Length: 62
Image (cartoon, rainbow, N blue to C red):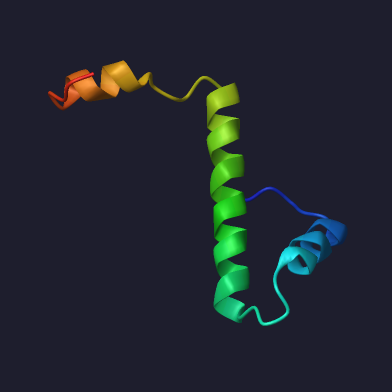
């Protein structure tokens, strides 16, 4: 479930885009931000795996 956001955060995100930004550019920025926030939350909650564990699972070199 998505975390609630404040309007000022949305305004800051839009203000960082170039003047010729498209709706797709905005949607990409929103997607990236939400993905990073979810990853950080998972990390803080201990829901991530060490890269060595994942590589070993798939038989990849370290």
